[in-house]
Image (cartoon, rainbow, N blue to C red; front, side):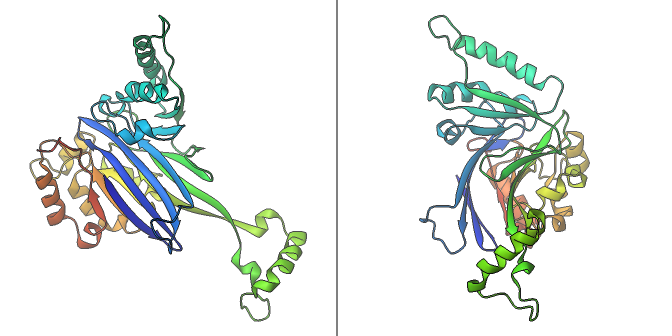
Length: 329
């Protein structure tokens, strides 16, 4: 379990992460997000809270995903078995508890059809008096750049293209809110903010004179981004403009050693820790960076030692490794 706290102006984001990813073995990462006012203690109820499951490999499913609230959103980056074969078991367990699941797949010609064939077989295994036991789910496929309903109010999920050996998406969770343009509550003569006692009268006047678009502007906060498996070339794609502003960015660093270099990592469809280091300045606006999907050729000590030695100090301070428990010995 990893807990990260990231300040954001007058707000604070607390991220609780369960599960993990190990290269070629299993990826299933449950993220619980709580948004609070910066001054609130951790005991204060969060203003917003929601959960997401990032991929669903079949070897190690976080219990938080099984037991979580109704209508869990599962974001699948690509259809390799270590990222999606846990879906039937997850759905069976959640359906048993009368919980539904929203499954988002990358846009590939046969992704949904292949998954539905697999699910149909598992529904037959879970017979109810001889009849297949249907899972509670909804499936949608996501084109890069499209917008999907998010896991909470005023949130959207924006898929973006990544670069792996099969069609693949990353995902960004974007919080959009309308706020009054600050210059409208300023004294025209002095340029000073109006006293609060005068706000109501000014607002009445403004609503009579201006349209909604003239009154309000849209503020965007990228709360969470996840790349799944990808070469570092995702940094040059359209999705980087969102992902590199995320309060929490989860991405991969499958290789960390010198035996496999950056070109070797790219040829396998993955990122090397040296790629992250070479692009360290591009992560300057990321609130917290979580690296995961390390190859099993490395022990936990190997990973931590490489990160300590290679990452530039400013990036190292906000970077956390997420290792799949028991798989890095």
